[in-house]
Image (cartoon, each protein chain N blue to C red):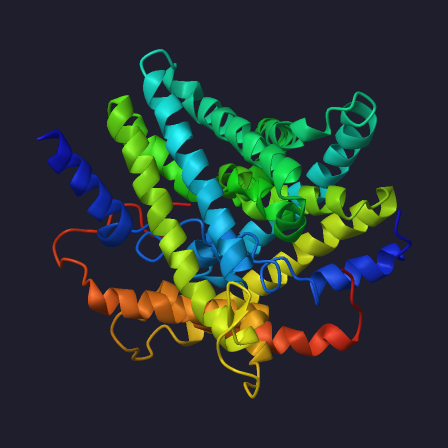
Length: 211
Length: 196
């Protein structure tokens, strides 16, 4: 029973209700860090950490949080975890911290975390919330990696810094510039809509109107 | 301290370092609200207004409160609180004294707190170590650049409203691809000024 529900949460978070291409949430940072696979991976891990623990915390204190200030409480919880990620990166991986720049801090305004806290952690027990956080974070990371895969492969001819396309490869500079990111995400959304069609009757939760 | 003319920063943040088209900030509201020119313009004005003042506010908070006490690592939390508080304050003042303005911009203000562009500009300001005038120019310029991008996008989307699109590409998909084309066009400006 428990494992079944956990599995359901995972498939929902990663494929069916994927935060990036299905709900169009949190794409600011999705696009900014995807010119290299490694950056995307680190960003994704940071996001999984923040989402999972914020949801856990929000869920634990959900009965004691007054309704009208819950947004502020959630923001503060998220900021606290983002600060942890930022400090850890600065201490152990300064080069990456430099490369990601302000985008680590911008995890705070990443709508995915806020959205999941509000729509899931407010109503569910801590364990499931934690798992939902991991699942949504993984859904996000997978999309980041897919975009980064094409951008790095075509833009630099490398994957995780290793040359795979050979010496003769002519890099598509466009792919590592901003337009490449927009095109890739647009195409990804298109493909995703066709691979996982939306049920005609059931409206997608969240959606683009959910800022 | 880098030495760049504030005017250069102003133009660069509108054209070459546009918040949406080259830094990907404020995308969520950009995609959701760019359906109509009038609404986009309203949101753009509100963003410019809030950006200008929160950048200045955060500049003072960072350099006169956080830095002297060695609390720079708290900047995320402090910036987001100061932005939220500022937006709330503006809303109350507008509600009380500027009825018409509140009517025009009121609905957009709560959205702005979660707009990544606002926090992003403050963080960029800290990372690039701008002085006061540079920060001011950067704040205003970024706001105007954001407004320019969202209004242009709304114009294009109004034009293609009745166009036949492949299934699945309607809505966010085509918006992103158009944004890509716009970003491509804006790269043409990169010869004018460049900051980084």
